[in-house]
Image 1 (cartoon, rainbow, N blue to C red):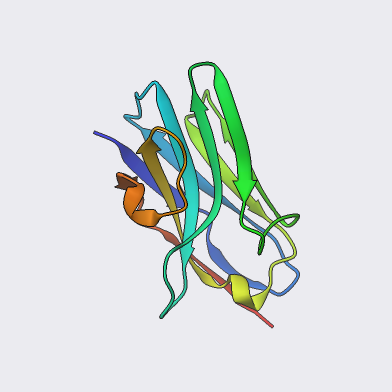
Image 2 (cartoon, one colour):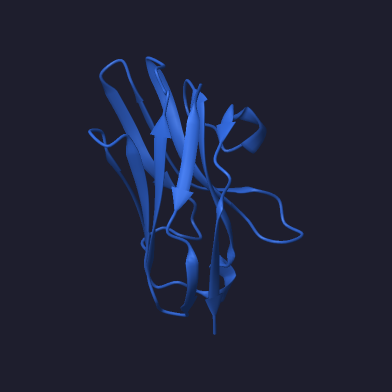
Length: 126
């Protein structure tokens, strides 16, 4: 049973930073994509960052253009945890952020992901 647990959200002022964590358990695929998505009210769920790991190959991380240069996706294999370091936050980054996993290569389509965490809210004020 795959379980994902996000943490680290909160409220910050524009220009501030937050680091989100996603602790994963039960992920035993030989090839896996782990991704961060976000969803603001009335918006579709958007892929923010993703990384593929499998068969001795790591692809990524890759980022949405809107966060490139500001967000950093990292992982700690020993802790089975991935992180999203978010710097220079802007009000338009306000959303609920989700960690997601799928078997195989990464996709930008949220419905392609099999497992999701409950999300963590990030609110950026101007």
